[in-house]
Amino acid sequence: MADKPSGVEIQLENVTKRYPGSSEPAVADVSMTIPAGKIVILVGPSGCGKTTTMRMINRLIEPSSGRITIGGEDVQAFNADELRRNIGYAIQQAGLFPHFTVEQNIGVVPGLLKWSRKRIRERVEELMDLVGLDPAEFRDRYPRQLSGGQQQRVGVARALAADPPVLLMDEPFGAVDPITRGHLQDELLRLQESLRKTIVFVTHDFDEAVKLGDRIAVLGDKSSIQQYDTPEAILAHPANDMVAGFVGAGASLKQLTLLRVRDVSYSDTTLTATIGTSPAELHKRLTEQGRTYALVLDDRRRPKRWVHVRDLPAASSLTTVGRPVGDSVSTQSTLQDALEAILAEGGNAVVTGSRGEYVGTVDITTVTDTIQQLRTGHVDSESGQS
Image (cartoon, rainbow, N blue to C red; front, top):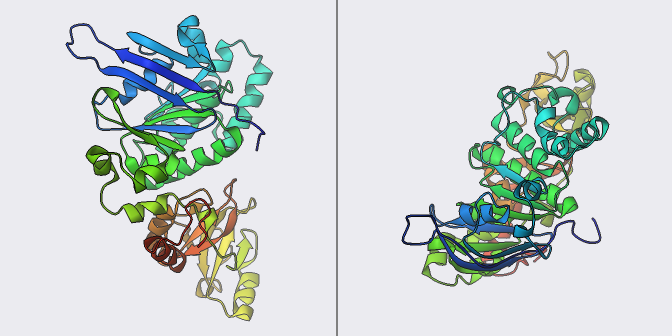
C-alpha cells in the first residue's frame, strides 16, 4: 500500500443550491469535510438532495452559494471541463458510449487530455486487468455485448483512466442483480485498498453504505446532515429517530457488514485440481483420501466447478463435469455476503483472493459462531477477533 493516499481532501462550506422558481432550496447550507483517501457515503431518502450535493463537487450542478475546495483549491477557480477531466465519475448503468468499444470508452478522458496512443493503450490494459476484465477478450467488445456487471466494471475503469485523485459515484451498482452487486462492491474495496482515492459515493441502500463507507453522512431534507460518522458509530449510536430508521431492525446482524471474510478463519483444506488434470487422476486422489468432492480451478487458479467422485469414471475431461461454482465471496466480502453465499451454496462458500484466485472456503459454523460472539459483545469489529 502507498505511504500516503493518492486522493485529496474535499471541503464543502455552507453550500446551497436554489433552482429558479422554487421557494425552497434543493440543498441548504451543507458543510462537511471529506478526508483524503477515504470512501464517504451520502445516504438518504429519494429526493433529499444527495445526488445534487455530489454533482456540485464537479460542477455538473453549479452551487448557488457557498464554497467547495478540492485539495485546498476552490473548484470555481477552474474551467468546468478541465475540472471534470480531473475527477472520475461513475453512474448507474455505467453510461457507456454504445458505439465505442470497451477500449475506446475507457480511453475517452486520456484522449481528451492528449495522451499518446501508446500511453492510452497501456493504461486501458492496466485498468482492464485491475477491474478483472481480460483485455484480449473484452477490449474490442461493445457495451451491448457485455453483462450489466461487466459494463459497470468498464464504467469504473473509465472513471479511473486519467488517475484522478477524486472519484464520484452515483448509485453505480444500483441496476445490477444482488450477487453481481456484491461482487462489484468487493472489487471497489479491493481497488481502494491499493489506490486510496477520495471517493464520494451516493446510495439509498444503508447496507451498502455500511459495507463500503469509511464514513457515512446520513442526509435528511435539503441534504441536512443528520449524522456524519463511522459505520460502527452510527450502528451503535444513531443520532436521532431518522437515522435509527435507516439502521432499522436487526442492528446486531448488520454488524456482520462491518466484518470481512479476511477477519475470520476460513479453511483451505478442500481438495483442488486444475482444469487440465485427467478425471482418472482426480478420481484416484479423491478415493485415496476418502473424499467426496473436489474443486476444479482454471490455469489462473480461479474456481470453476465442483466435482463429485461419482461423476469422474465416465468423464473425458474436467471442463464440463460436475456443477459450476455458484455464489462465491472474496476476502473483501462481508460476513453478510458470506452468509448469503453459504445459504445459496448449501453449507459453505468458496473464497477468492485479490485476483479471483482460490484461497479457501468459509462455512456456516464460522458465521454463526461470529453472530453469537457479536450478540455477547465479544467480537472486535476492526479485527474480527474475540
